[in-house]
Image (cartoon, rainbow, N blue to C red):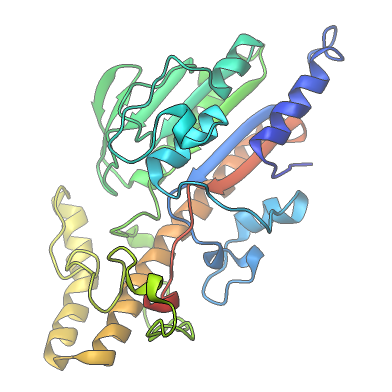
Length: 340
């Protein structure tokens, strides 16, 4: 059975089993999948009324679903540093994005590596320094793009062509099939860039919600009455703080000619229709919400596809029964709630 557990529970379980497994090494493998800005309300296992995530739901059905949790410092880098170290931001030294992670400190991958685990990380890192404690690292540079990412594989820069979510999944599957040491238990950390802003979907998901609206939250037009602190929140409103690139009114950069043709074939007619309407006020906010929410959910769908591929790979390799699979996000996100 697969389980969704906190890393603290995982390490406790490993500590309890080390002595028992001294003669027969049956210590569990760990696949840790992390998305970026994945909102709980965009997971059908948590009751989403907007999308379905069958592969993430499979984890919830076969294991444990966490319903009460919070992020102590809900920013990309600080959240990742805390997961690696088990320490709050003031203790691990990574307080905000732009800081540099001290890779010399004790981390969970180093502890597992010292206990004989084969360790790997693929995808988003976002901690400035190079990964430590991993036998294999293939990471995005900074935030990374949605298409055609340049990545650093064990110190070597490699330019790849394709959709980043799929590329990260490909690399994780490749490591499971050919890269790990078959004689060791393993830790694989698969970190997606999606569904981080600016939400560029894979063309295979363009048809999703293309001809229908996703539900609006009841508080889309919240005026934050009686909640002064809410009105001082960082610039996250749909009405006033979305860039043209967020809602696909700008032509994307870094695409191949074929990718750009697919992009323009889908968004071009819709953008022309929007411009002809001349929307303002609440109507403009509604349009922005639909454009943003649909693209966000399409990006989530690619992540869910990737989870399914990893689970299928574990099944095919005969590893599923002794592998703990964890799905999480570095933090949540707003999907129109409070107008954010």
